[in-house]
Image (cartoon, rainbow, N blue to C red; front, side, top):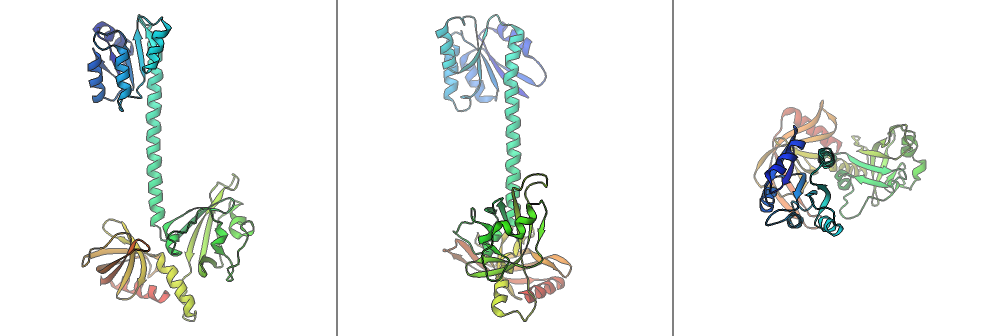
Length: 374
């Protein structure tokens, strides 16, 4: 339903305008004086005001000037209805006070309807645009939440290999706090050799595959640079653009490699342990809320890095998304009680300790298998 307002001190003039404009989906708000119009404008949302110039007491110019001083009505389009629109200085005063157009009395019904329809269409288009923007913002917010909640590290790069986006899982995997990643070459972060030697983006497997519009799945391990440390990862990458369009960039997902071989050197196992626990996310089973990321895991309990302090002694039901299918399941569920919580000023987050209080037989086997990987 759209609303317009007609302001005139003569009832017959309002009736004449109403007879021309009346239609389904349009409501006409009527006012017989400037004061009544200002009062009704605060109560109703209208898209256009047809305003008589010559009225006793407050004339149309004064009403328009007062409308322009009010935040709610300052942008409302006003069409002045007048019988004396011949003097140029008179017309100038009307436009100066906020008029967008004039209609002369006696008015031509076709002209009146045509001019009003223009502003009704503009208001309808503006409302549709606002609804589309709201939907876009909602989708952007939903997508951002989903990307933030994913345990896997995600990078987006442009055609030149510069990072345009990364999710919190990558920041946590690299223990990044203040160092920016956007704008850096992805090849500063990734290497396909154990020496960590920097490679060229245009000769990399990611670029060569995605440039052709093809997904890239690494068979061999890549290495993610974390200062002087290298974290072994498998990568999968997909081009951003459709195959028929020119190459615009890629989205890269990093999967930490999980060694189960006890012959792996202790230092390398510590490296993998850090990379694996950094992508383990704990969720509240009742709400689905992301509670935090795993910092340490043992058979008796675990430590979380969270953004909020935890209530000590509170028993909670949690789930954790596994890095791969274990015991035929992609998640592990458990009950735990918070036993300590400390604020880390340097990183501005909380380190919280939990003790397991409830694990099913299957989830206990999952825990044992997961610990064996670490």
